[in-house]
Image (cartoon, rainbow, N blue to C red; front, side):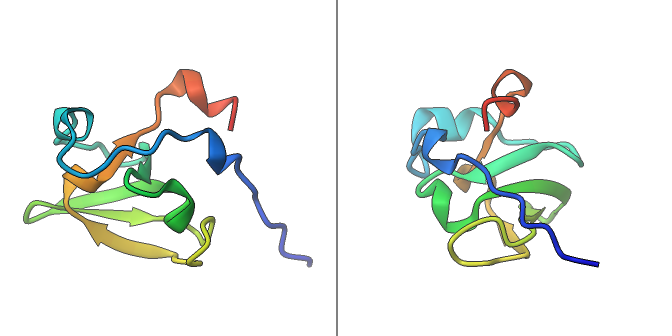
Length: 90
């Protein structure tokens, strides 16, 4: 079976530096929410929140970004929630 690559229009995601007011607004994430790395969306791509542990968020990016990262842990300030209204555009 052929592995199908999922591509997203990462250029549509707004860059949001860590500790910017918008980045600080969202501190808690729920499992299953879609997020991206705010300072440079194309690096990691779009990921799904797996869990939160000791102030860090585990995210599964499934290799959707330039770095090809599958899973990583982040402080919440570096992640931006993708609203459901934007998902269809990506």
